[in-house]
Image 1: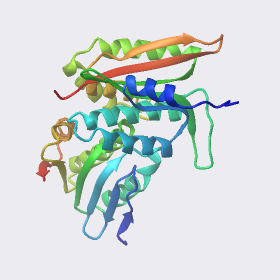
Image 2: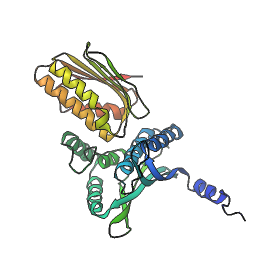
Image 3: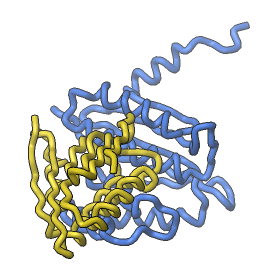
Length: 182
Length: 124
């Protein structure tokens, strides 16, 4: 009779988990810009807003450019992925997920482990080294700076989780957290 | 050469390139989809300005830029540094909002490896 059903359960679930942004779909520059604006305005009271916004942009642009599922629209590129911002107690959690070819998984995981092992000064030095170097030849647009920048701006290690889908592709999740103002 | 103006968008800064006065202004937020493509006119302008051997002032007044834009900012500074090394007249002004410690720190980091006269200036 009522095939669609009401949204009350979903409403409660999102409310209980304090989800600020949740999106799965084709992420284009336009979609990213709209969500970015939303994050800036909904967190405007937080001193960490700019950092959360900056990490959101890096994660979302990763999806736009590098998701193995591409769904270009009339305006240009769009990569399929999921991105979620939620708050829990005194932290904000920002996570993104998208398909990546299996052959790239180890490289990304290794890069996460490398930056996670660095303190803030080491990250700063590594960022300087990369930004002064040549652009890498692997199609990377920002000199491979994205993960280093994320590690510098967030308050946690970068958690990288990989779910193998089949022989060619895996789903990769990157999660970080930020401390709230108390 | 005429003054060239690139209007700002939600994800790219306003750019003013004034050849007569040798002034390049970059103002706003920078996270375009393709930073290298977006900054190409700036590199072209710098190329003409350095070839013509005119004094150059670059004003950065950025609120935010992503990592691919930061690589372009460094590339701009490297061109200016080279010009300065070849006796070209250059000055860089790096404006940051007075409470924006991250943007101040970025300016300090970006100027640490170059010899170009580089001023850090806060605004409210």
